[in-house]
Amino acid sequence: MKNEQDITNHILSLADRCVKCGLCLPQCPTYALTENENESPRGRIALIQGWLTGQLKPSEKLMNHLDQCLLCRRCERVCPSAVPYGEIIDRAKNLLKENRSTSFYTGIKQLSLKTLMNKKFSSPLINGLRFLQKSGGLFLLRKSQLGKLLGLQPYLEILPELDKPFKPEHFYPAITTKQGEVALFTGCLSGSFDSKTVEASIRLLTRLGYDVHIPPQQGCCGALHMHDGNQKQAVNFANHNIQSFNPLKNIKTVISLVNACTSQLKEYPGLNTSDSFSTEVKDIIEFLSEVDWPENITMIPLNKTVALQIPCSLQNSLRAEEKLITLLQRIPGISLPPDAIYNKCCGAAGTYFVNFPETSDKLKLQALDKLTKSQPDLIISSNLGCALQLKAGLKQQNNKAEVIHPVLLLEQQLKLI
Ligand code: SF4
Ligand code: SF4
Image (cartoon, protein in one colour):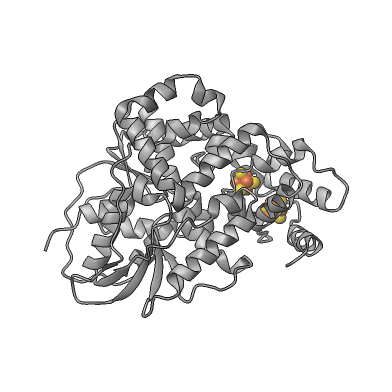
């Protein structure tokens, strides 16, 4: 789709599938908090229809109702008309972006985000943040008014303890009978914000018999830019990643470690990219639950209490929550009663925690109320943004529960050969 009219017609044709039944309303977290129709999926679709047919002006108020959507896509799961709500709102926000000016504060927040997501600049920025963290400067910044004045407080709250970044090799050979070759998508932040999971994923995959390739040129998946209405930048990232992975030969699958990134990688075919991935993309949860594990692999029983957070991207986009539960059941002794599982938005939602910190905090507290009820030692989360949000909340509550990626937990429970 090249021009604005084609895109408008496309959005309207998708939105026309909505029969306004309202079945999605009870599922929507922003509607549950506000009881305002404009903060519901049905209401937002109606606003988009009104604007695109010229009956409503794209006022600041209208745009705010769209911005306040978490993009959790929980509404899509229950829709009897299979309305592709995520696509409708992403495309609508991209159209709006072109007609919208950016405020000073939004500009600062977006610049910080873009710097972190861009590999060229993220390294010095993360090194600087690590230095500030170790020297206590970050603590002072957090306590001072400057972070608040610049609107950066939510970033400062969610920032995890930064270890030395993990820079992986380009290739790791299988360490048992070879099953195949895979490529790993580590994205832009996992190496700095969750290096233990990246390392554990490589160890587990090679232990299962896979050669692991990690193209060093790969970069951000573009999800945050896409959901922020910046489709042009998202397409640039997509083209870059496709060019980074396609030259690899004999690859069975591109495996992504973060659910939200996987969802975005799987949506590349719907973007106007110049090429497409020459192999399938899978989340590591999907891959590990679908492949055969060598029979000689045994696991140490878990003697800890766990709770499980199911990220929206895993549940509503990849629709793979059952696969995660099946995978975790490989660990002897693990107990996951329904009471210990939380599957609603935790409020991180890409950049939502920065743009709407009050709503984000409410949703974080709702998630933690449920997840900490059984006083777990571990809270399992397979999406980096959710894990950081939950960690920040636990820290505020002085709760010592550890937030852990399922692959790291699985790998820790492996019995050494
Ligand atoms: S459930 Fe689907 S069809 Fe019904 S109001 Fe919501 S989006 Fe529209
Ligand atoms: S994506 Fe989530 S927040 Fe947005 S309308 Fe759907 S259910 Fe509500």
